[in-house]
Each structure stands twice: as C-alpha cells, then as structure tokens.
Amino acid sequence: MYDGAMSRTGSGPVSANGASAAGPPPSPVGRDDLDARRQDIVTVGQRLYAKGLIAAGDGNISARLDGDAHGSRPGTAPAWLVTASGTHKGFLVADDVLEVDRAGRPREPRGGRRPSSEWSLHEACYSERPDCGAVVHAHPPTTIALALAGISLEDPVLSEAALVLGSVPVAPYVTPTTAAVGETLRPFVRRANAVILAHHGALCLGRTLEEAWRRMETLEHTALVIWRARTLGAVPVLPAAEVARLRALAERLGP
Ligand SMILES: [Zn+2]
Image (tube, rainbow, N blue to C red; front, side):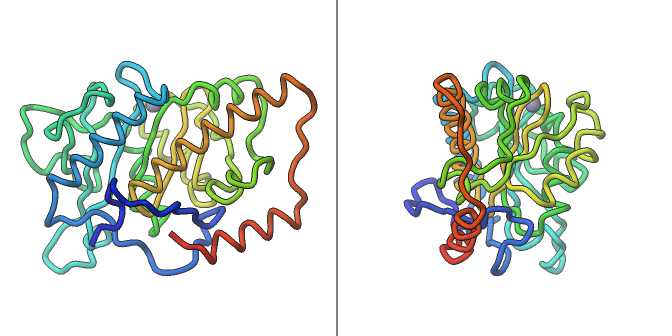
C-alpha cells in the first residue's frame, strides 16, 4: 500500500537524520496503481516548477515500487519509477515517468523515452537507505547560492528544519550524469535526508514521495530565511539540547 498519495494531509515530520529512522520501512508505491503513481510524480514536477526550484530540464524524481525493491516479493524483480531524461519536469505527462530496474534500464518502451541520466544519484539513495521510498532532485536557487557562498545549512537554525530535514551536508562536486555522482553521494545519504550537491543542486529522500517533496520545499524555504536573516545580522543556532528534543519529537511523530 502506498501512503504518499498527493492528497495526504498529514504534516509528515520525520526523524531528523533518517539514517537512524525508527520504525519499519515504508510501504511506498504500489504496483497495482501505476498510473496514479505516475501522476503523483507529474504533480511533484509541477510543484517544483511552480515554486521555482527547477528550470528547463532541471531535476528528476523517482519512487520505489511496493514490496519488490529488495527482492522481497517472490518472482518479481526490483523496480522503480523515474522521470525521463531531457523532459521539463514542470510539464510532465504520465508517459514521461518510466519504470526501471536497479541499473536504471527501462522495463517497458514508452515512445523511445530514456530514463533520467542522473539515475546513479537515485540508486545510491535506495541502496544506502532501506527506508527510502522516493527521491526528489532539484536545483533550488537559494539553497545553491548559500552553498556557493560557503554558508552552511548544517547548523540547526529553525525548529521546522531540524524536525523535517535534520543536518544538511554538502557533497563535493562531480560531473553530473556520471556514475561518480552516486558513489560520491553514498556516505552523505547514509546520514542525511537532504544533501546539497556542490555547484549543482540538492536531493531529498523520503519514505514517501510526499515526504521527499516536502523536504525539498522546506530546504529551500529554510535557505531563504537564512539568507534574509544574514542580510540583517548574525544568525544564532538552536541550542544542542533543543535540537536533541526536536529530533526525539520527530521520532515520536513518525511519518
Ligand atoms: Zn541535477
């Protein structure tokens, strides 16, 4: 069963750093409702564009198909949905969302479309995080600008960010679309729900697609607040004890 339907209304805060997320892995995208799951990805693409988090061919979105990502369903091979390469994610149609295997190979013809050239980024998340049900990669401008200026988002400044995102590290630059992207990301996604890709963009993991999207929105919103605050003066961080309290709260609240 998939609990990340776009109509879901829960606030969805989660463990601050999902590498130690409590509880069982999520039940992500159900294979019995692929068309609806494709449409959910289309919707997230529209949201990313509406919020100014992507431009032109930027970004890509994926979701794990229920039950078989780790071969747990006898007789089925692991599979995911991912956006097609070169598409504008703000104007996707359902046919632009392809079913792929772990190597990123399409499992069906969809008008000659090719899966995202950045599949290695997604695969690293699913390999390193059994709790990961979806990945949203975008190019959020304020987040990228802060990283370019050397301003860290690792320090906890906002309570909501501490709850929803946890610490946000910056992974070193590697040429986009190469396999090195995934390899570079592995140690970062192991310990973080949101990672900035230096000179490139950001990615957010979620137990559901809705959760991954919300983390991306929170990431850029947090960057925007920090940017504005820094134009006005010094930005204090939350006390360590309060951060620990927030992370415990996130664990209790669950997905
Ligand atoms: Zn990118």
